[in-house]
Amino acid sequence: MIFLKDLLILKFKAQSRTTMEEYIGYFMLKRNGEIKYKVLQYPTSFSSYVNFNLNEPFKIFQKDLNDSILKVTRNSPEFKSTNSNLNRYIGKKLVRDPSFGMKLISAHKSGETMVVKDFIKDFFEEWVSDLNVEISSEELYYSELSKQFSKYSTPEDIMSMLQRSDLNDLSEAYPIVDPIRGKPITSFDIGSRIYFTVLKFSNEESKKKILEAFPQNFNENGENVHPLVGTIVSKELTNGSQDFILIKLECEGVLFKSVVYSGLNVMWENVQVPKIKDEEEFTPIFSKSEKDELTELLKEKEKLKISDVLIAMFLVVGIVLAIVVGVYFFLMK
Image (cartoon, rainbow, N blue to C red; front, side, top):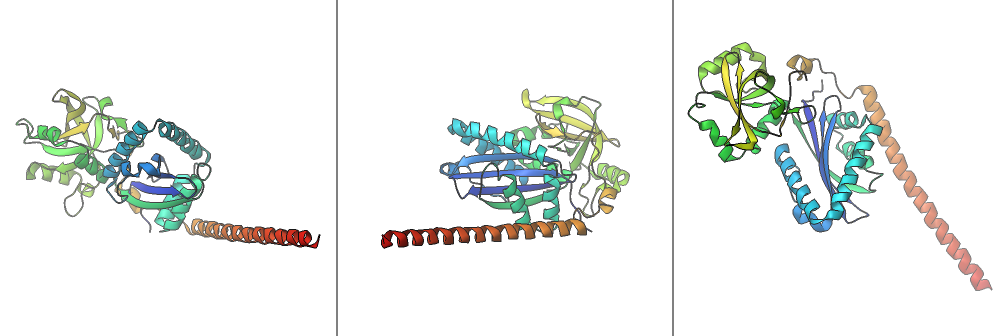
């Protein structure tokens, strides 16, 4: 049985063999093939602005990519326009090929790294030809993604608010991040119910209450691996800033605290998070028939490559023969 976590993130870097330009970005995919993306095109002369590791955790990669986009577009108005056009191209391409997400997921789950690269290369074929593609993949549960955001997206001075005397006895949590279908945390009012993940319990009594109520949401190490649902009982701006919001959540009589970036997209209760039962019954995304189809696709690609080589050889032979014939007639005159 093949399992997929809640999200697959394919990070990629590519260089055109025909132009002096490079690309870096990601496709974030849900199990059903829904996609969120961000891609930057830049000249190779700007490589010093765009120098980061594909294997970094997604949140770090995303932050570095956002910073690079700002640097490139700020220093090159031409590439600001180019990237706007590139994003329009990607949007239209996804409309024309709605199965693109599922094809990436299927190839990834079958371990077909070269096929994933080929799918990405083919996706951009009408924009840029002959790309050399590098990829790195990261599978995450929503809880794991949310923990990355809690760790890497909140400055230390803001986090220090959680040490306030009136908050000391509260357990620590973080709302479930949903970059694809989520709503900004600012749109949730007091009394709203939202998904969250536990970061740290303040005491054993609180931990016991939650674990007894939701034993299947925690692993054998006591880590919260599947989202819980809580009610917002208070909201306030942090130190008068509009950028971060301090919220308190209640679940099974236990109070949790969290500091959240105000622009963060949070999963809301009407968007059902995958349950453990769904994972147990999750059928392979890549069935035998789909594998056969993918194998045929690969064979077709190889045939195309071979045919291209043969055509090129015939063209070269034809040109050489034409030159020989031309020289022969020229000398005979």
